[in-house]
Length: 98
Image (cartoon, rainbow, N blue to C red; front, side, top):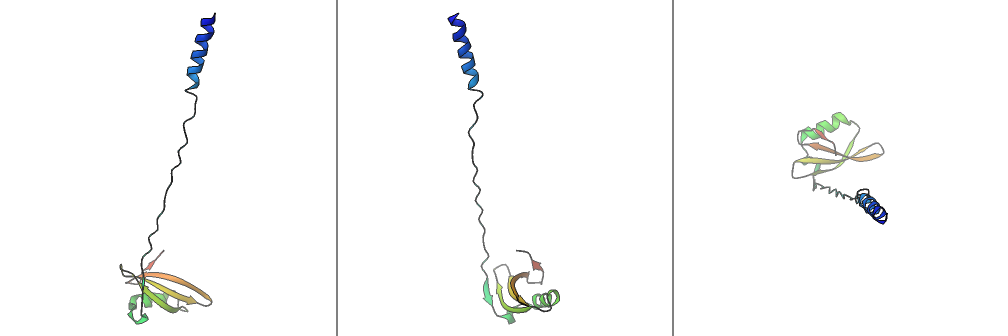
C-alpha cells in the first residue's frame, strides 16, 4: 500500500514539472534616428525649381532661411501668416515628407 502511494506521488510530482510556465523574455528594441546635417545657405543659392515650387504651393509664404545637406536636399524656414514651420525639398522642387 505504501508503494502505491509512493509511486502515485512520484508520478504526480513528475507531471507538475510539465505544468510549469516558461520564463518571460523581454525584447528591447532601440530606435536610432539619424538627423541629416543641414548647413545654412544664402537664399540666392537656392535653386529656382525650389523657389518656384514654394511660390506655387504657398503663394503667401515668406522664406526666412534655407539649408542644404550632402544629398542636395533643402530645408526651408517658412512663415505663412502667423505660423512658422519647415519644408523639405529636393533640388528639382519635389517636396519631401519628414
